[in-house]
Length: 64
Image (cartoon, rainbow, N blue to C red; front, side, top):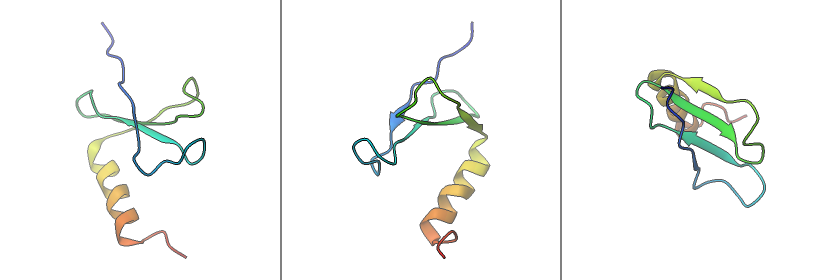
């Protein structure tokens, strides 16, 4: 039986804007979606690239 993602909204998401939800309840998958469009696409990553992305955000790697 396929497992269902259990999404939670980012604590950094504003009300109605910049809404990101992630699900980490399935081993070896981090699922990401836009909470404004829950039936829309889901990005699935392995934990290692997800952690690298988060680290890049924290360290300012994407700042201009």
